[in-house]
View 1 (spheres, rainbow, N blue to C red):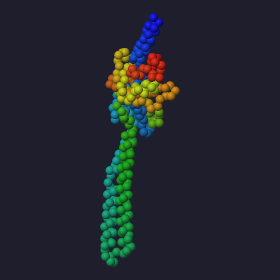
View 2: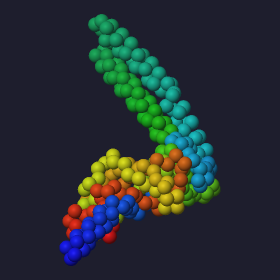
View 3: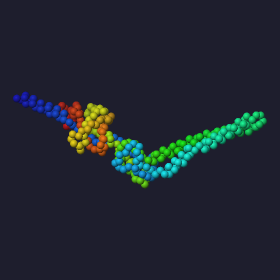
View 4: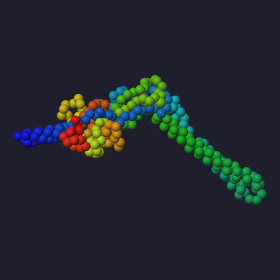
Length: 287
């Protein structure tokens, strides 16, 4: 009788341990934007226009905020005229051709037509004209470079989105001075599709059984109990926390509905992550 009772007890204990290990376990996580860009102007200036508002959906290259540019546009026009002007270069070329003809005439005039000094002066004058021609070309190249720099300055006087995303926060108003040194910048844009799911509390032994590209079920805590979605592991922290024994994992979650980031989710763990291989038999990881 005692042997039968002992066998039944061992059977129940073993069955209980297996049932515990086989139950779906979850771990808490939170969604984060897959990109967050804080954008600022290159230089100080008066804000002329704020073209979007908080919560707007924006595309790559879309203008968001502009500075006052009228003075800079006028300066750019002056620089354009200088860069495109051919007058100085043409004048220098004509001067060189004239001095060259004069020198060749005197140098080839025959004995006694021109003195050695006159020929030498004509040669030097021609060489000076050649140097002026080179100087005119350098000025031309500099004018083109200055015009290009002014165009870049104008481009930098507006902020454009560098991601497809949503305007998170606007930190400037039209008419105020934009300070490029402000930590919050002028505007911030986040990308919520896809979302990142940050999982900070997995044990290192559990993470060792995961691999990049693996898909795991994820559910928003405010959703129905069966509203699981697939998320893919895209990053495993290369260093575990020695004190807590945890190791961070990041998953990518499609978000076509553009749900807000920062929401709590839970991650369903596969059976192989439920029992600590170093724990006594029958002890589950989530106990």
